[in-house]
Image (tube, rainbow, N blue to C red; front, side, top):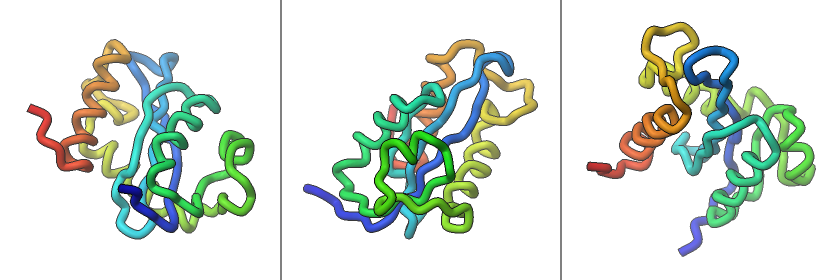
Length: 138
């Protein structure tokens, strides 16, 4: 069954593994109306990660994306599909703050951090699956 959504907000959030030199990025998209996370990808700040996220969003049939001015969006979304607006991205920016508050590993300065990327990705994935997708993992 194909779900049709009108608009989605897409953004990336910088996170660290072990120390500042080991950057990771959480790319995710939310429904513009409800603020629900539609899909997410963890990885580098590259076009390939955005394309992976875009592929995950295809079943939703999104007609308009609200983004910032990052180059990946310019290269892989047409001007008709993409609207650059920080004002229209308030829900996803709020989602970033909520994630940073609830998952201490996403804090910039904390004693709770992951030493390796797989564990970092696992913790973030478990949280999103349980609290955003309402899936019982265990």
